[in-house]
Image (cartoon, rainbow over all chains, first blue to last red; front, side):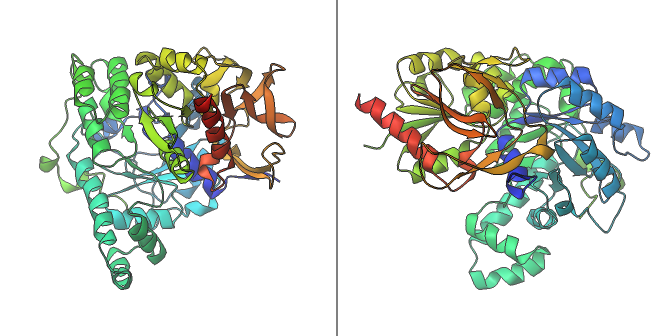
Length: 294
Length: 195
């Protein structure tokens, strides 16, 4: 009678992660720190995005042994990344029992034309986007959660803001349209008509909409929440800072009290050095991760 | 007057509970501080991550506030993570909790996300059709003291239980369109506020 891995259970897990913080970790110790700080999930990685950026070369799925060790260390959900279009990496992650698969631009794409057909999988997927059209294309392929891309590993929130505003602004534009204008808009956006029509009606994405890429402080996390992100991914921002444990705690608190400036002031006090961060404007196009995928 | 029902809003699936409560005619309120628990007729602890909610509730004085209100008779309903927080015993875990109900729960008891499932649940006490149960990395109740009422079972395990003014489920009625469990909780809250 029971039916496993239905669409409702996939989107349902994304619902459960709402109003929380998902943290990038590279080992069991970091995973435990994240869980104790109140992370709702961890992303098991070989290297955090700032190091991927520094090291260059091809970035691939994590070693399964590392993912398994992290899964064994915590009781919260564990996510892991596969390369864009690399459905075999996704098959492997699913067989490990990973709770969410991130088809991620942070790794080097395996296919520049096609993303994974995510509907075929039992594990739910999260995908990045820079605007509404890209979000709806990924949902059309079966993503159960969307995250705006931002620019991972920079400690600079500017791209995350740009992408989230593009999504929410796109939704407001759709809501203002007559229904007979939606097909032309769907063609323009390159997105499935049914999803465009559904988003126009509800004013929301059909799946939860999270934010990623460049969050370094509690105030950054609260900014993304106030701009409409339903939860926040924090990558290098925590474990590349001077005092990861405290920063992890404080970012969790900031996401819970994102609308309360007095509490946010308290939370932000005496946190020590955040990660240094980079100016995205001076970054050559080929070093940008967000332009990977379409 | 509409009942004032709070939804603990530190983390988790808050919106779907607010929608369900509003559809049932209640006045749903987000709760993030101890003061906000004071004038409520009932409180829902939503699904999400029980460790996250427990850490934040301890940190911001909400454990004591909810324990006090529950002891005064305010109805509390915990779904999934909320049920874990209400349990006196959690297998293999020292995580912060409210310790309200005489139940022993096991976290992620049905497996990881790929084992999450939907199943119809017979619910003779609420009458009518089976309830559409959505179980997401769900906990189950390993044992319960005899005075805990079993309102519904799945494969011989209780999945919806009541102990006086306290209600808990392994599954997520807020993710379905069936409002029977929310209505039942509102009835509990109504009886209490009238008493």
